[in-house]
Image (tube, rainbow, N blue to C red; front, top):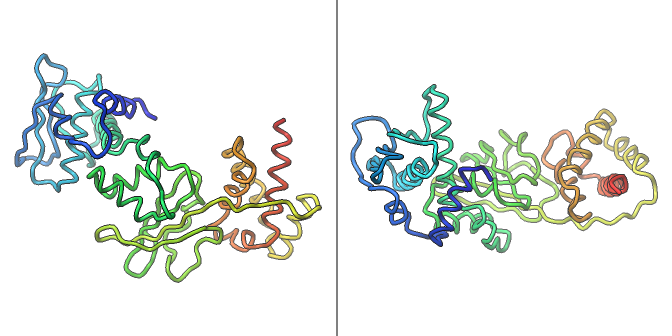
Length: 311
């Protein structure tokens, strides 16, 4: 957790708050809030940060409700973060070139995100029936935050493998959200989530809408791998490569194996093996490899070898 996120967490802890809570009441303890129509292009302005009196927070009343809420949390960030002082005109997003200004705006955004959608609170929520739609809607309803803010935060925080793709009206993937332990989504842009088989190792998939946007998600779980082949892993891999005409991928397969093992070492063996296999899933060049019946045997043998080296 970043320092400014810890500051937001401490504010919530100090006041005994977790979503849903009254943000306006919280912010009023630190500043005087006013809503106005702005004559300039800005989301909010905070005047008198670091002075003897309470700062005054001005919010652009012409913004959508979710943006006004985020701006209010953002302005509180400017007040709480010790090195933000004076008068700050806030643009939640934009293209100004002043590095120091945008560093402050980025810090206030991080503070606001944690204040509205606390990491520890997300981890306490129940992910029931593997429904990504139900989980995201629950977070949206309790926080009142924007769809984009919730999606970004949730997929940065969750510690189990989920991929969620935003699709256009034809099913083409235009944006991908993924948890850190999920299969890579880098190669998914442009694929059709409805007509193509994107993944092979998912436990459940779901199609849903959030407002005017459509999504498809995949949830992955433990694959329950056990060793059933007595041969060394090199012999198993050679057979896989021969039968899939993929000899040119041997170095890439072994490199991915080592990288994913290092990211997951220390976890139970079954979880490591599942995460390693799923890390290849969704990558076009590994498509036939992942589907091969012996691939789990290669993985469990390599994992056990690497585990033995750690002892």
